[in-house]
Image (cartoon, rainbow, N blue to C red; front, side):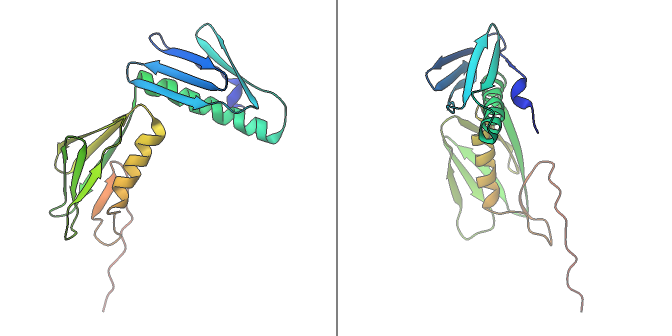
Length: 177
């Protein structure tokens, strides 16, 4: 059984946490994030610590309290430092460019793919084959990276496609005659 909810979340200096009813909001230099607190979890702020307590000892309350603590910890980390995912594009003629709030991908299809960058996310392309996705919301950064990767996942024979920076693709051996 996890006891993650028993550990308090430390609030660094420069981060403001406000709680109104069942909603908690965290503000910092990287942005503002909000989360609805489940009724089975009680959040209290003591100085620069946030403590999480479940209202009863049911299995749902135990699960939700740990999840809430992890989500609030990610919110605090996100508005303080931010999160980033790195993607690399492998393949002849495959490239990506950022133009304003649009990401243009050329991934071997007969048409270019135009991806609208959501609010709160910034995408940098240091060169034509690398992408850096940054943002304060961990879930949104991961979702954007997964959506971009899904346009051309790495194929198992040559390894061409969009992959995470340190992702390893196990290649299959070609059919022999």
